[in-house]
Length: 178
Ligand code: 5GP
Image (cartoon, rainbow, N blue to C red; front, side, top):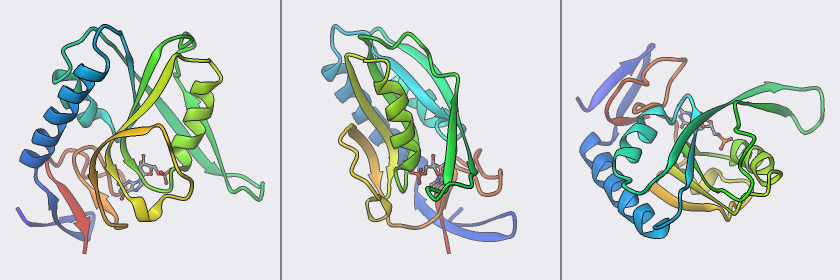
């Protein structure tokens, strides 16, 4: 299906599942090389990353651990605007090779917040693997962003884990708003 409706909003196809699978396989191969003889811990940022994590981890054949965290955001009264909190971040990341798995990096604020929390535990290394990246929306550079599935325009997308008002996460392709 090239055009769909989610909760009354129209979307058109952007990335087909077949392309996602091919790209994910290549990232997996790269991770197997880069982390050979190490035992990284993959940490997925919920909810959006659950499908990408599941498909990615099947392409990784080195020893590894897998976990998930959740980030809550709400508007605070500070001038900085958004206040966030992480739930479920493991507390034993010291000297570990950490790979954060994201669905999408947009402004980069979420990732900056999580990276601070991870760095405080002094891991051996940190890398970020994001399925999607909107370079035009990024507000601060993220040097840890080493693995990117697809760079996309600064448009709202849905599907393959990403939602619109809670819906559409189960779509196997990725769609953009029209
Ligand atoms: P950031 O903090 O980088 O601005 O945003 C990260 C989070 O915002 C993502 O993990 C995702 O949950 C949400 N997000 C950003 N852009 C989009 C988008 O185009 N579609 C959807 N569904 N969520 C998005």
